[in-house]
Length: 327
Image (cartoon, rainbow, N blue to C red):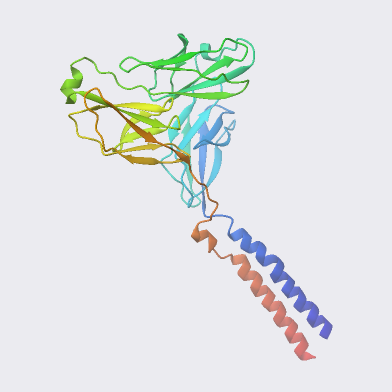
């Protein structure tokens, strides 16, 4: 019977050593979860949250995406598919523990002129602009209108490369820039344009606030948003954004440049342009540093399974001791 006692005791120890680590690991996988349920009217469209690819839209129902409520919230959703206008919107709600937040997206079919495949291998330009309804021209050829912030323009690697693109709309200054690269088959190249409101007459600037000067904001990341004292001014395109100011107006004090995936940059404005003068401002955006550190609440979470296994081990050990004492 003495041998039986030692066999039971060893089994109790093995149960504690083997099962407890597993239970502890399961308790620290990562915080409480909620869900986004993403609906779309088009099957097979690609879904991105903050430019992170999540999956494709199902034929029926919604694509459910788990999120940790203690993590960094997603800010934007983008859904796109060839032949349809891209859907982009802000995410303003974070699911609660065990809760679901519904996100609804709608893709509209593009005009036939945008979809037609002429021949050869196809790549894409994606023209981003801050004004919906603006017309996009490639070398004076109409390539569509901005819808939900962008338009897709197919190009063929065997065709003559485009040299320049122009974005324009009545009431706004026209934007033009050169095209430096040609997309390869299946490749996408982003192009950016920022349209600023145009004065309705030559006397309007003087009526609004006197003579005009300019700030030229330079940044290493195209598509970054620019604000002056929390007043949105537009997006960086081709490395810069020109911001009009009135020399008799209230001076701005700070400027901020930001884009998803990068640490925001905030600088001080200590100079104000004179009439006709341009002052350069510079901002450098660096990628955000990601970390896998779990939330404190998650790291200290105790597993109920672990407590149960410990109790079972103690019962077995007690039984073994009782058997031995009877002998």
